[in-house]
Length: 458
Ligand code: UDP
Image (cartoon, rainbow, N blue to C red; front, side, top):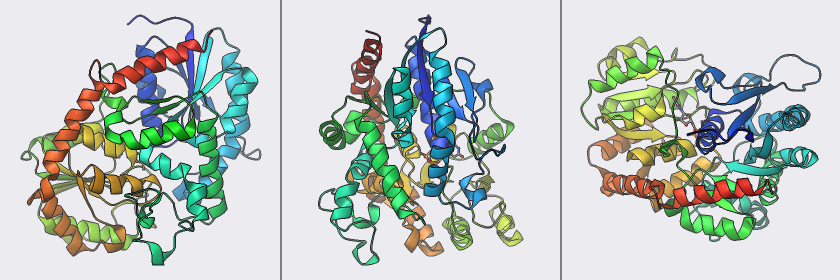
C-alpha cells in the first residue's frame, strides 16, 4: 500500500519481549494503514532494527547517574521486577522527553505517541510539552487490567497484600478470580508495586485512548467494564499478529530451522511445547521436577530453557547425564524458538505455559490446549480465565507441581483430552478469525482507531 508521506506515529515500548513484540506488530498495522512509524526504544534490550526496515528506530540512552553501561537485566542485577521497572522509569524519563521533543521537531506531522501503558504517566508530561496526543497500548488482557484498576478496592477490602489463609477465597468483586489469582508479584517494594499499578491505570485514564491486543468476543464483559471505568475510547483490535496485513521478519535462524525439522518428524498433536516466556524464573528443584515430569509423561516435548530461567544456574548444568541420555529420543531442549511458528506447527498438541498474555493469545489463535503454570502478575488472571472461563486448559499450580502431578496433567491433556478442551480451543480459534474478518469487531475497531488518530490533526 502506498505510504501517506508525512503522517507519523511515535511508539515507545517497554523493553521486554512480551511488550516489544506486540508493539512492533501494532507498528506493522499502522504502517499498513499509511502511517510512518518511529520506534523510540531504550538502550536496554533494544530490538534489532535490521528485521524491520520499514520503521525508523531511535535508541534512547539512559541517564543513570553518569554511568555509561546499560542497566543489567532483572536477573543479572538481582533486582526484582518491580524495582527494575522503577529504575527503568526513572532512568529513561528525561532522555525520553528529549528524544520525543527532537522527533516532534522533525519534518513530518506527528499524529500521536503510542506508549506502553506500564510507562504510566511518565510519558504524559512529555507528550503534553510537545503538544501531541498520547495513546497507550495495553499488552495484557482486559480481564487483568480490570483487576489492576480495582487495586485500591482490593487493598481496602484486605485482599492484597495476599494472605496465605485466604488464597482459595473467591474475590466476589472480580469473579471468577480467587485471592491467589490476583495480579501481584513477590517484591521487596510492595508500596512501589501499588505506585506502578496506580500510575499505570491513571495513565490509561488520562490518555487519548487505549489500544488492546485482545478481541471483543473473547473479553466482552471485561472490556465493557473498562469502557465505563476508564472513560476514554478503547480499541480491542487484536490479536495483532493475525491481522492479514501484518508481517513477520523474513529472516530465520539456523536454530529455528533445526526445530522445524525436528517437529516435522513428529506425529500430529503429539508434542508438548513448554515455555515460560521471557522473564519468569524458577528454582532448581522445580526445574528438575519439570524435567522428570516431562520425561515420565512419555510424550515428545520441545522445551525452551532460556539462560536465566533457572535461578543460580547458567543453563542445563543441573540435568544429569542420565537424564539427557534418557530424553534424547523424545525431547528437545532449546534456548529460544520462534513461538508463533512452533504453535502453528501441526505436531504441537499442547502448550505448557506461564500464561503470559501474548502466549495465551498465540495459543488461542492456533487452537492449542494449554497447561497453565502462572508465575506472577497478570499470568494468574489469564490462567484462571483459560481454565474456568474459556475452558481451553488445565491448571498446574506451581505450589502443587511435583513430577507425579506434572506427568498426570500432561497425560490428561495429551491422551485423555481432558474435558473437551481441544474442541473449545478450535471454537475460540474460529471466533478469533471471525473478529478479524472484514466486518468482524477487531477490523471495525481498527477502522475507528485509524479515524480517531487522523482526527488528532484537526
Ligand atoms: N517467545 C518467543 N520464543 C520463546 C519464548 C517466547 O518467540 O522461546 C515470545 C512469545 O511468542 C511471546 C513473547 O515472547 O510473543 C512472550 O510474551 P508473553 O506475554 O507470553 O510472556 P512474557 O515474556 O512477557 O512473560
